[in-house]
Image (cartoon, rainbow, N blue to C red; front, side, top):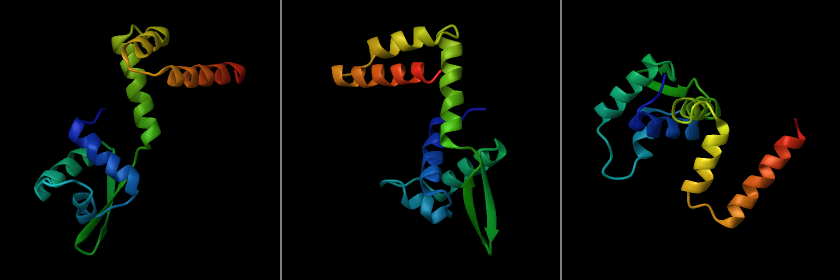
Length: 121
């Protein structure tokens, strides 16, 4: 299951804060802030999808993520590779290195990461 763009934005806030009340979530947004009802709707959808849970504390709810950021994006990237690059990490890497504005230094860093990973296997 995936999150919409607005759900991902809210999820990023939760991943950063680890636990948050509605006020904390709203405070994380720049002006103009979304309506409380908008955030509540997003939280309900994210709870239904199994990404978020909450504890009732009096009349308030303290929300927290059920899914780790790394796990979510790992599945997301693997799905992207499968669906758009014929399940080929090489095609993805080729596209990524050719179609992004990586500097020579960033490419060298990427090369070092790959070489390190090769040594570890």
